[in-house]
Image 1 (cartoon, rainbow, N blue to C red):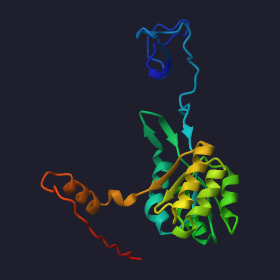
Image 2: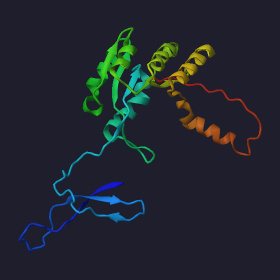
Image 3: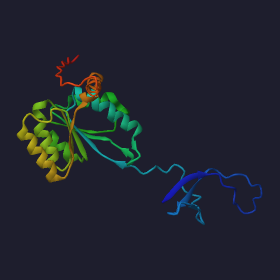
Length: 230
C-alpha cells in the first residue's frame, strides 16, 4: 500500500548549510503488511503537488424530466456534481448525469440552460427513440421517471442493454410486466430497483414508528391522500 502525504523536508542542495525548510513536497510512504512505515531511498521530490485523486465513476442516464426529476433527482445530481459521492466502502465516486431522454426535450433544454455549471454537461435526446439514443451515448445506470404507463417500455430497454435500472413507483402496471423485467434483470445480471420515496416522508415514518411500539398491538388500516401543489 502506498500513501502520498505532504512533508516539510530540509533543504538538500549541495553547499547549503542553512537548514531552511524546502517547500511542502509529496512524500511517498510504503505501508508494510506488518504495520510499520518504510521510507524509500529516493522520494519523488519533483512530483506534482496538485495531482488529482483517482476516482471511480458511474455515468447516469435519465428518462423523463418532469416534476419527479426536479424534486428528487435534480438536487442529487447537482450535489454529486459539486461535491462528489463518498462512502468508506467504495471511496470517492463521480456520478455525472451523462444523457437524458424525453419526448420533446424542451424541459431538458430549459434545465440545462438554467443550471449552467451547476450540473455536468449532458446530452439530451428526444422523440420515440430517445431512450435508445440515451443508452447508446453510454451510461452505467438509468433512472426512469416517466408517467406510470410508460415505465415498462423504458425499463425493458434499459435492462436489455445491460444497464442497471432505478425506476419510480409503481414500477409497472401488471404482474406479468414485473415478472418479465425481473427475469430480464437476472438474465443480464444487472440491478433493477424501485424507488419508494414515500417511505421517507415524515408522516409515513411516524406511522411506521407508531406501529412498531408496544402500544399499537392490533392490526390497523390507514388511508392517505396526497395533493400535488402543481
